[in-house]
Image 1: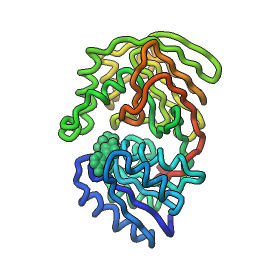
Image 2 (image 1 turned 45 degrees about the vertical axis):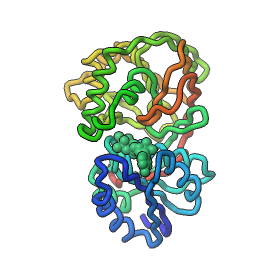
Image 3 (image 1 turned 90 degrees about the vertical axis):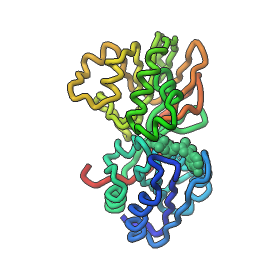
Image 4 (image 1 turned 30 degrees about the horizontal axis):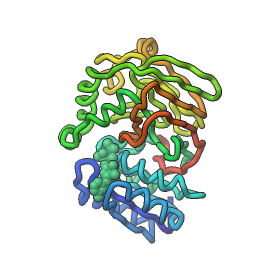
Length: 298
Ligand SMILES: Nc1ncnc2c1ncn2[C@@H]1O[C@H](COP(=O)(O)OP(=O)(O)OP(=O)(O)O)[C@@H](O)[C@H]1O
């Protein structure tokens, strides 16, 4: 894949923070294929959104070296452009869930080579009120886990930090009442967690459900009625013994294009791993809003 002009945005605050190594692994590969490569480091939270909105239309491709939080910020800037540039995800964060969904290697040098030699595929986005998510939107246990996780834990334990936080959170999690309207159909009930997915990984783990696609023009909505430690372990770990049929007793799965979620009390909502918003939430899929690089034959 050849781009004449591209932007590499990197977040030195993501992942294990060894950004010299990450840049050393990616820049030589990218610059060998891109004659005009501009490199900008994010200076603060939200900066990646501003950079993408400001410079996105001037380049053929934006490469993002960071984790899901950086990717989230970039896609929020790029989604506002009439014709966003091609996006390349380089796994520089802790979880890098959407790069996993695209089958991108978690080694940054190999990922850079894969993207430069890769193919361009259409990717859906999720619009939530006036913001965008690439991977997921969620309330209940998932948002509490994001709020409870401590930075020191994430630095030291990486993905295990999520698991520790989930266990701590599940003990205190109450049910909440919801009313959901999906493509005109209304349902009501009680749940401990509701997740709307575009990608298929959370906290580095592939969800044990078939058929979640990032390019099908549909949101996969999961309503988790009960959570216990076994269920959390099955969802958050790559447990090969997990049987999706036993999960289905506790989890309702729907697909829809437009979803409105209301809860009896205002509830914090997570978007791509950070809590940014709260209910009620108006969610819609934007089919093929982005074009992204992925490895060939994956
Ligand atoms: N210069 C900066 N100083 C402090 N924070 C920054 C800076 N630039 C970006 N950030 C913030 O760093 C946060 C963490 O980044 P990111 O989510 O990409 O990494 P991560 O948490 O290690 O990875 P993941 O989300 O994949 O687990 C983002 O929320 C972003 O807003």
